[in-house]
Image (cartoon, rainbow, N blue to C red; front, side):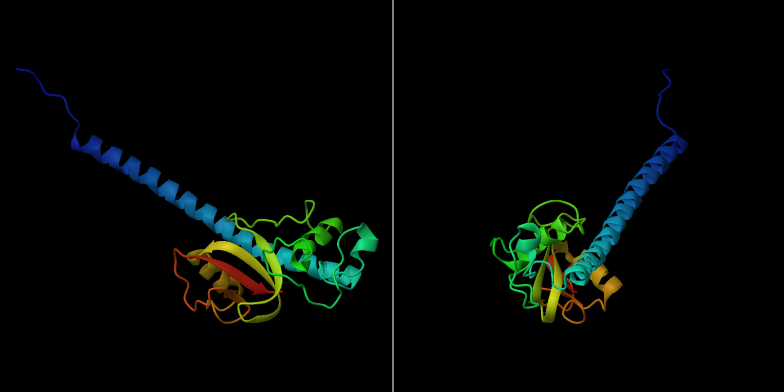
Length: 188
């Protein structure tokens, strides 16, 4: 009579425990990476605010709106009215919201060259405009943030409500739909 070979219950249990530990480690790692991206995105809002206000302190004008940029760097000047004209993600070369990035880079306040939009940690563009989502005055915009990320950022920096406070969704959503992408704006 032949003896049948197979796995014992203990061996199967050990394999299942190992698989569970591996899955748990992978999921925890993904959560840690997402949390790090959220922190970097929050820091991007703060960093952009600091760069814009540093420019304002140095040159007495908002970047993009600076009427002396042509004389200073040969860049496109703004009209100096204190308002950053153009929408967040405009591609019109004469819009102050586009030239803002060139002014910040030429002044050495952010890295890079030209008028290309910087990206946040989740890959979407960062922009600046005057008045958006019911917020009057300059706002920093971050596009393509998933609702669950937008809600976390809103709770960390404001009230967690997408249509009130200083952090808002441009879709005017009081409650963020978890799997919907939003442009999230924050008052400068």
